[in-house]
Image (cartoon, rainbow, N blue to C red; front, side, top):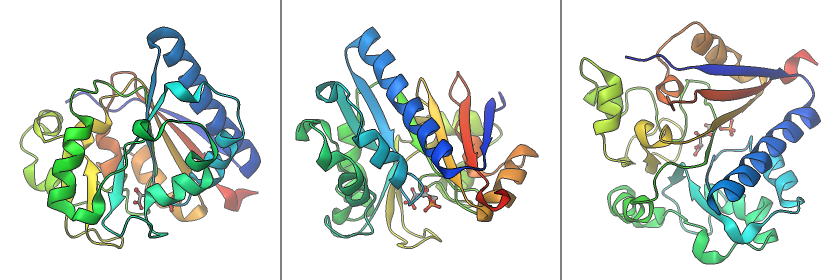
Length: 239
Ligand code: 6PG
């Protein structure tokens, strides 16, 4: 099974971390638009990306060519502040001129099964994403790919093959991070991307980062794009 190639960058200053991540996103967009006329990005959920999204929202970009997807979504009402899409809208998407038809929100209010079916239709035929943004949980999860999830239960002799064989969108019913009901792009679909950037912040993530660097098979290590992944880690306790 090919390993995961990881390029690590550690930060101690939040402003530098946020600026570096925002610059990474904008550079990926400029390149994709120049080469293919469009930029397809998958957004990370949780709280770490919020200040990064706020910085991106202040940039001058060719927003009409951006197409936005979500790595996962929580099964909550559409306007619930706990929704990853609500955070992304308030921090960024509602402040720039990306056409509404190009923001592909997960209809997670339908529940894991029905929402996953609808989202699978939205991402079918999209091809490799230009950039996938991901966070990291303290247990090593990413998006809603948690330890012991269907990916682990399905895993056979070669997890890489299993990941690609798995449906691109997976319903989650028992997430250890509330809410239990979620919808997630699968590890294989998250890794079907030209670039993957993990944004990780806080001393609470140190153990997960150390396990990852030691080669533990945490869920984040299952995201294996051909070009490797970039991880920006703000170890804020070291300031
Ligand atoms: C979610 C996210 C999840 C998140 C990590 C990190 O729905 O919660 O998709 O994978 O990225 O748990 O969350 P923080 O950035 O808030 O630490």
